[in-house]
Length: 512
Image (cartoon, rainbow, N blue to C red; front, side, top):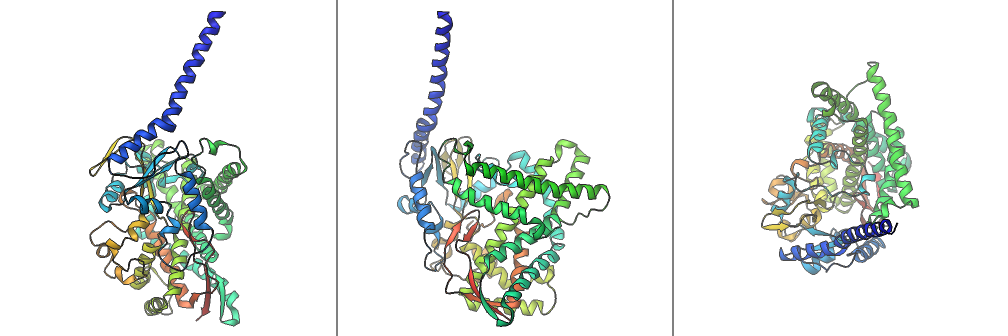
């Protein structure tokens, strides 16, 4: 018996030693080693602090930024970019600590281009929290990403997008009808346009993705909007080990939302599958095209080459949130900036009236809206929906002349390059759409300095969808309304899932 207890005690001691060493390595030895390696490569930042890293500073900066609006300015980096103080204190080659993990900024355009092109090496950052957001092709890696990208690509071909223009038109008309009821005989009124733009883009994605409209997709939209708010708050607690697994009220609610959204989308898919079986389905919407593409792939190459039902659900969740968030962000900042720069609003309206006249816009008409295209590019430069892109490496990796240690997380700071005066000139913070008058390539002056939709093989698959939808919406708005900033407008760019106006977009609308 004594031998048994001795063996048990020895086993326990070994287990405690092994896991104790692993814990010590995770929270102290490995971070300090990575810090030394990053400093040797020319990166600077605060020294690592046990377990919490820079959490207190990150939390304080976030709370301070969101506590009050700012004076109207396009210099929004101090408010929305949590690396701002680190860049100011340590230069563009800096790092911050998110718990025991260092995150380094890569701000050289050529290195950013290399990171985005080597997508099998520099992969998406993942965590248990991110898994509560839609996954799909945006989150997958390597062969799984390649398979899903291949299956989804046909839905976003130019010929398919042309067929979606009538849906964009119907969604825009529905929003304008609501505005007409509010403005009525007064001819003008103050309105927070942001909720209406969110409804418009949600309606458009519901029609084009699922063949339904906003009312049928309302539950999905509201749940995903709620999830975004929980995600923002939860992201600040990521450095607390195991926090996401605790049965807190927020954690339980986030998991409930995932289940509710999945059930709603499963109901839509079930209806579509029954329609397909009865020969009544059409494949004009994204879901139909996805199911058709998936069906043909499985037929030709076997079950393993296609998507499972759960994977189809994830792609649908992604359609909903990505299709809605990006376009509503672009539209709201466009309206805000055109309210501030009435000369460009007038120029854009004149172009719309000249190109469209009294006819219903079609695909060809929208492609002739050159001034609106220039305006959109300038808005995306100043207010990109995603202010940065995250990547991680799992092995020691060479990047240019750098050698980065395994486990390093990287931030490609879209907003820093978009606001870099050495690239764009001394008027970098000014709204000058004419800088895109000769196209994006000319505007970048030969540098990879403008990437609101990412870049490389993983460039956003829906960018043409978003731009086409935004053109339709803005053309219809300009045709029927002029608008200016309301005195009650509070300028407060806020990064949730995308860059949004924290207090809404209060404008004065004038019926034309």
